[in-house]
Image (cartoon, rainbow, N blue to C red; front, side, top):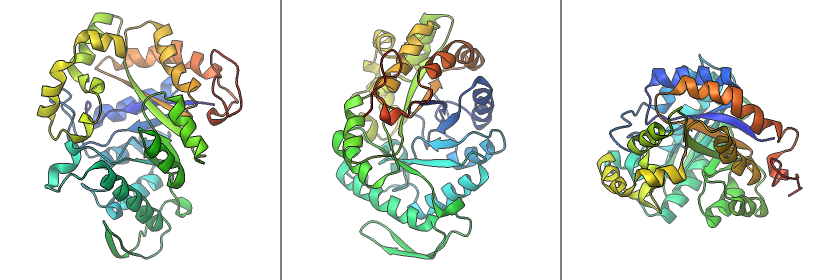
Length: 339
């Protein structure tokens, strides 16, 4: 069955707010948590940027739900050996364990040390090498590695993850990246409900979970919700590779001047119509996703959690019970079929 989790947005909320949202999410019936890893927010209106590993430590004392990073970049701002240590410690602390979602990153977060921002093909190579380094460290053995991008000398994690292994999910937004993820990742992360992309991952041999996320803005006032999204998250509507190459929140603010409230209203689920929220989530279920994380934009958090507990989660989970997502293309609003 498809599981539904809550997406904690580090760019928009303080550490204390994120911890409280985790508590509310568990009470509302979400079964997992995801959290973003950013040095900068996308714009100044979001206004937050806590160190994700510190927040995850606090989450370990507030919830028993598993936590997935969506996603962290273990290649530039943090060396993969340091990321491995942070992830292993988080896995040991969290009652539900950690799933390490990783990606090639954005210049917005990774340029801050003054390193050159490589083209995508180089970043993809760096990511694959970083995952290999981290996996070796997770075993708890002594690791020395001399690769094209990273050097590790006599390193050992004395607090390794339980069993010497930690699931690593890789973010991919195109068919080649999805096929590559099938070769070396434990799962696929992709944000849009693209059944064709999921199919490419499965056809290439990917057997791990397919993980996605979506932002919504619940409010009893639809117009207010649209304005909230337009103020806080217009970057969600930027096309192409802009999100990967723009280096500062101010550059994103300039780019998103082209995003209108009408575009937000067409593209983002806003307001309190249950059918629209259910239909948005069903798109992921029908595309074959195993885990879907929903993030609420703005400050109307308690109303959102009440709404999802009472009117949304019972409807979207009822149609997928007992049917593994990767063995089903349409289990909500249609017949389940084997992949």
